[in-house]
Image 1: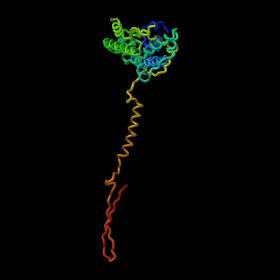
Image 2 (image 1 turned 135 degrees about the vertical axis):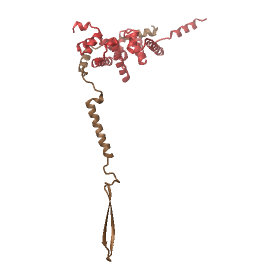
Image 3 (image 1 turned 90 degrees about the horizontal axis):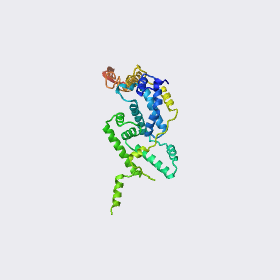
Image 4 (image 1 turned 90 degrees about the vertical axis):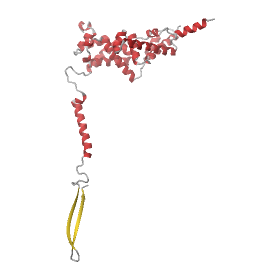
Amino acid sequence: LTARYIDMPDEGLMALIAKDDHQAFAVLVERHTQRFFNTAYRYCPHVETAEDIVQDAFVKLWTKREKWDPTRGAKFTTWFTRIVTNQALDVLRKNKPEYDTDRIEMFESTNTAADEHIMHMQRAQALEQAIAALPDRQKTALNLCTYDGFSNKETAQAMDIGVKALESLLMRAKQGIKTYLMREGLLQDKAQERGLKTKVARP
Amino acid sequence: MNNNFDTVDDILKARQTPPDISKDLPAKILRAALKEKSVPHGQKRYIWLFNPRSFMALAACFALIFVVIGGGAFNFNPPGTEQNTYERKEQTTLAAIDGSEIDVLYYWEDYDL
């Protein structure tokens, strides 16, 4: 691959891809596969499923390459994140998510104490379940803002909503997770805790 | 050990990072993309109805429906018409035993079944 392709921004590569340049497509795939795999994995925490999602999304990009419109001024990553997210949500609707239990065990084995192992597993599983239980739009807002490094403005653009609406979605998502974790006993209500302490302190 | 997180943000930060992709995934994607057929620039796109093959299939279906339904509806000799039922009269004169003549009128009614 020539240095010309490697140094080129994503949008420049997309312009070449629209002219059937397969080498530009190869550079784009090499550059972004891990990033979009991470995006897909946060919806479907199963390696093979997430890889299939990324593969299907890139194949779709290649077959419908003429749909890229540089005049709209959208960043490639914002535009393609929407494709990957929609693909992942489609898979989620069709199949129940599978969890990589092997990976959770591997994650646990790095800790020493047995109770810490159990706690790590509970936390990891409870968080994944809490996020999986969120409505699609809240899930997308949370994943893009918290884990994909998108700013609120970029996330709002990717989701085709206003920034205020995005902030509302984020707030509701966090509230949903909080409620779920409190029910699981992994998070305590601080206000309630303070109230109890005050009551105890009274003579 | 503190078994509880302080805030939701702490929990979100503690989420596991996704694993690394398989080394051959980019190559697999490129192979899959090359196999996939795409419409080259300038090639004519058809709405499905005007796609020649869809159009021929649709025309064949209509022709079949026409033959099946039309065959029952178009009875070329429906009952009660002139072509079907006709009456024939014929008069003849027979000789009676006593020698007188008797006029006999025969009717035929034929039904073309």
